[in-house]
Amino acid sequence: MSYEAQVRMRSWQGYEPIATITLEPEELARKTGIEFEPSHDDLDETLEAAIQAQSGRVFGLVRHVNSPVPGTEIYWQVSKGRVPLAIHDALEALEVSADAVDWVKPSAFFRLSRLYFSAQKAQKGAKASASKLGKKAKKAAKGRSLLRKKAATKPKRD
Image (cartoon, rainbow, N blue to C red; front, side, top):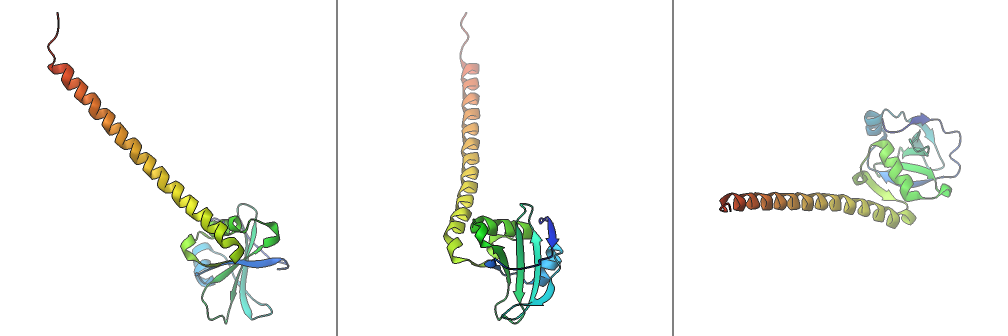
């Protein structure tokens, strides 16, 4: 379990959808132990849950029962700012990869993609650096080996 705790929401006032993930509440419940409760909003009957991430952020999880689109919406208090970081935090708390994200709040999309791609680039850069270091080490070892061979075949001076 990556989230800190499941919490009871007294009011959803100020919470807005920031992302939708492809997983249904049943899948999330099986994977994480989160318990969804039946409820309703202005649109439809819902299945709802709220979790507190280890960062302290509280996220709402909502599935509109009669929605033709599969998935679960992630709600957060957008007024608290930094939506891309909140999305990242929610995915981490739910133990879900970015591949499961079906929709993000448009204002967060470019920042989130920049965050995701910079992380990918850093990971590739670390692999490339390790590869370069490995090649340099091999080259240095080969050079030392050649020096030893030359030293062994050189006649000794008296």
